[in-house]
Amino acid sequence: MCGIFGCILKEGNAAPLIHSSLKRLEYRGYDSVGIATISDGKMYIKKDSGKIDEVDKIVNLDDMPGNLGIGHTRWATHGAPLKVNSHPHTDCTGEIAVVHNGIIENFMELRAELQNLGHTFVSKTDTEVMPHLIEETLKQNPNLTFQQAVLASLKRIEGSYAFAIISTREPNKIICARNESPLVLGINGKGVFCASDIPAFLEVTNKAVMINNGELVILTADGYEIRRISDNSPVTRDPIKVEWTAEMAVKQGYPHFMIKEIHEQPETLRNTLRIQDHYLDLLATFLDRANEVFLVACGTSYHACLAASYMFSKLAFLPTYPVYASEFLEQCGKSVNIDSTLLAVSQSGETADTIGAVSCAQQRAATVLSLTNVIGSTMTRISRVYIGTQAGPEIGVAATKTFTSQLSVLAQLALKLAKKRGKISQDEIDCLEENLKKMPDDVETIVRTQEEKIKQIAKKYVDSKVFFFLGRGISTATAFEGRLKLMEIAYIPSIAFPAGESKHGPISLIEDGFPVVFICPRDDTHKTVIGNIMEMKARGAHIIAVVEEGDKEIESLADDFIEVPKGIPSILSPIPFAVPLQLLAYYTALEKGYNPDMPRNLAKSVTVK
Ligand code: M6R
Image (cartoon, rainbow, N blue to C red):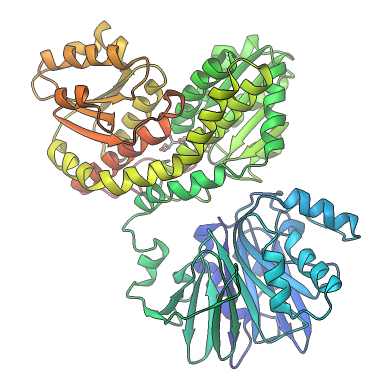
């Protein structure tokens, strides 16, 4: 996730407006910033890594000539947050500048092809192929217009994008295009604007034009023209009036970041499926060679590790040890050695306990691999190899979209390792990959069909003094995550156990009306889970079951049930089954009158031990 903005003004310089609009998009990414303008047929670019204010202090972003320009605030996905990787990116001649939000999946092939044709690349980004591709298209077809060259280049791009592109060859226009990444236009009598989100231009206009997937837009000072990328046919679309306040707009109309981020999960899960295969392969190679593998993290990220330990064991027959990062030194410190591998998982990449565990492992010459959402964080700097979880900035303190992204990446990693080790059949691998691909749609279905119901369940149980969360097998991790979400934002003391353990003590707490949330995928644990539900019911518990659609057996036993789509393989079940629990926590917090985005005593990134 990054923020892009572009504008053509009838009068005055564009840079100050681009700068202030990027500030309003900073919630989409904030590790680097850059602006390109054109004046008198000449391209001007200022960019660097760092937050917008930090970069502005050094380069003065407002001080750039030209009534037309594009800007970018970055959340690194390919290439560390360094000046060289900051947008805008240019072609070899510096005539074309591009800002981009999204992931170009086939950038490695395109880059190799263009390099063979003599193009020089300076960054590690996927985006840089676009200006070179346009340059090459124009070189090979000198009669094409800038617009035609962009159109031809777009047809070679696979992946997601919102582009804004300018060229000194035709210095009076901006060309934009969209596939999957958001893009919206703004207009007023003084100019036209393109942006990732409405808040970027809400201060100057509330007249917006939504751009759809597969569309290209030509902006000039006089207006906009929309065309379909597939056949260049024109599209007519009138502006709409936006009624949001600036604050609502940053949250895209959602009342809180947490619910916005829960709803973003189909998109973020799609992004995880675009991770370059060779990164997964590299990580899987290290895991394959390891003598022992520790999965180390805190909080929600630890729950992803716990789920991953089932994935690695069941798919790749690799036993791993999930360890709370804060306990790593005491629990495993002495046994870690040169043959150990530590896979650290952290949304922020800055959690002190996790960094501490990594340092301990490094001192003992172990191999450190990591998974983080923040490229350029401490974690990426101290790991041998890392993968970004592609979820974009998460602002709500409670981790939601980053949890499901972590799970998706870990599942892909386990599958990669399974292939390497030849432990499960190709049919099984194919089936799991197919299911991973449809996960974004499954999550979309859950949110669309279950949200209202979950609101009612939250209302019904809001006064409960305590909650139980139970699951067996990999659903133990889901139960732990459900408990953490409810406790941290709704402040209801909650208990989670593997369902089988509950009868070894915790069951003594059960009395009439005690709410127990059961996680019930239709897997090998299903029958035993029914037994555990019966034990709880017999003692007066109220059962809230998260089940597969049409699971009549459990639905008939439960007081309330929430459904996820049918046929989810057990190993992937924590992804969809966690979503209703996020919603339950969110609506319970609202019922209690708490702000779910800022739970008391907590910080998004815990940088003290
Ligand atoms: O940034 P990290 O993933 O390392 O953070 C770990 C925990 O602090 C984090 O998951 C925390 O538990 C969240 N509040 C969970 O919602």
